[in-house]
Length: 231
Image 1: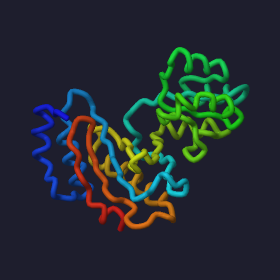
Image 2: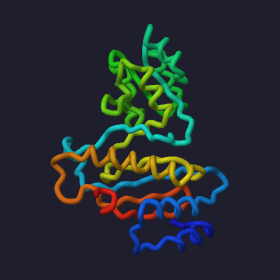
Image 3: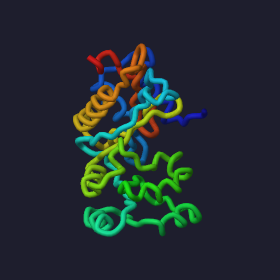
């Protein structure tokens, strides 16, 4: 993959043979986030899980104390009083069956998170092929299938993020923006790591966190010292 001159210069500042402490890694990632936009700071966690086994799947959600720095558009599938409640709580879009053709036929996907009341999951299930691959399918473990739509919306707007294994058993999550202070990024990162460690499946053999890399949207990855994270 061909990289630009800016990336090459930034990459020189990262010593590939070093596993960095969290504070040093954050400082380096911030320094190398030199794009013309406010880059997202991401964490990529390679686990020792085998996602082919259901009991080794990791999936959940955590509210980052300083949010993600991103405005999140929320779609809620609900009817009656719950639809009214969702609108009052600040959902960007609220609807039911009438949204199915709009998403299926018109390719409408102007939302970042989908919340649904349990009674609507039969309807939402028809969108599984579209929402599933994009990571948008509501899920009870992530708190997005719930009767308490107000709490779900408030949590998401406060900075709730979902984490889950991809097919390579890696978790990819944002922990803020490059414009955040080092302290804010450190708080968010620690909150995420604590949640991931707590979610460790009991059946995982060997190392659970194999590697943790922090990067900005356009910057090089910085590897963290995993041993210091789990102690």
